[in-house]
Image (cartoon, rainbow, N blue to C red):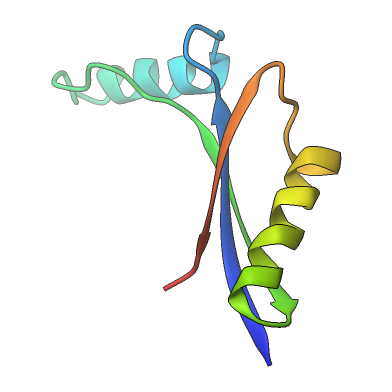
Length: 81
């Protein structure tokens, strides 16, 4: 049995997001004038052996040890749809 987990990692509020700013600028140049802000984020889908509870705990460890820098990133972990 395995569980598919979705991990989303983004910058904390107040952190500079040059990728998001560039996308917002490009959208504006393409005529999308109603876009107020763009924030970039990464999404990982990880299939982990075991039940949901164990998979969520394993994903938390992955974020703490590799995927997210707690100084600049926020992250969320959920069972994928």
